[in-house]
Image (cartoon, rainbow, N blue to C red; front, side, top):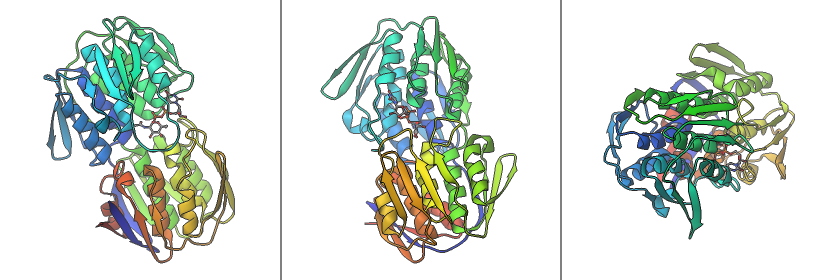
Length: 418
Ligand code: UD1
């Protein structure tokens, strides 16, 4: 298991290029199973979630070839509808494959998905939605078994706007007979990106980005070349790093409108932010002011995937903050680790009560999940002295070349294989 060694206290200066969005690329790769045409996904991030998804596709009989950072998937010879538990447990997004695999093979067998341990993360909405399209589902020995002779479009109302359920239903509906309408659909930008990808291979999807997504079933899909959205969570993580460490960082190749909730908060914290098309420049040279309270919400609200990094920032603001996590029950596992670095934070239920300290102190801490792990790295960068962040395999799930990018901005961070 690799770890990071960080000597904190350096200010960050320079520019950083933003990768394609993990949460776009994963469902797009799942969608590649739907077509016999070749799809080329550009600028695919070098992260373990993508590598695991590619392993699953290969196991289904798809051919995956990298051309530099681009990934070509050819599913014309896909011949397997079972995703073994060892692979499904590595990756929660394996559940997206239910929709595309059932569409392609009329059968699917998948072990219950894994992913970050950040709460219960049920898949009931995925399964209810698929049943509405005519899929028979049984659950046995840790596997979800799906069968359908004929997928038929239907109206589906989601109890809550689940990102994964919306995407899974879209994938199952693309080649179903008739029209599917998803009401109370998630509105995350990655849903619209999946729609754009599906339409570029010949699907008829509209409405993504609003709460109602409409899918008219088609018989055939083809190939395409596709550039996914930039990763708003990676971009947000670098902006928070710059705010915490001080300095001047330019995030390049971003869609600023997709992280306006964070930009708004960083402005309130006292950072200077300049936006120019696909670039965001953040400048900070002083102690940050606290924002009092913030809560995570589905898009366009403040993203749960930036909650940990932003709480780490609140920990060194002048004043108190209350952070409320509304989406996942156990997404404060990094807080006891931050306390080892001197943070004054208490978690009660879904709230973290934070009293800002002047500075963090270097310490040895353990990453328990992807974004919580990133938050610990940011705290280490802003801390006085040396920190070690252990078990960074969690961070590798979502951040490609994280330490190289941070070192490129002047951070003193190295990866050590233990
Ligand atoms: C996706 C993202 C993840 C992000 C999350 C919320 C990917 C690969 N992952 O995860 O990074 O943190 O959106 O923005 O895109 N729920 C149910 N039943 C279900 C499904 C979800 O109750 O069947 C609940 C969840 O417990 C949670 C809420 O809905 O409270 C949102 O979850 P969801 O939007 O589904 O998140 P994911 O798709 O797992």
